[in-house]
Length: 137
Image (tube, rainbow, N blue to C red):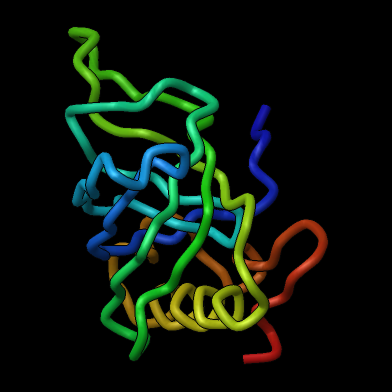
């Protein structure tokens, strides 16, 4: 059974992540595989424990300023050999302007990227089951 509240959108973006509890620990760079209004998947061969809070700065091709968000690690993805291939994170903190920029980016990525045509077949599929709507953009 699908537990996701929102459909994922294939997105290529650079993401810098900093452990919220350890700002002195420095930042790490990642690439995304996909995003939704509810979260993001980071491609990586390293991981943080489930429950770790990360401050992200998402650099997209469609936004002038990076999108800043606080996230929480909810899933570690591994391949068939149990090697880490990425992390699923949910957004837990984002101001209203950042949220609007994220929605605009997802809308543009969804409608203008061939990869997303493989993920879903209709505009209806991009609507969240409740809450935010991309229709206003």
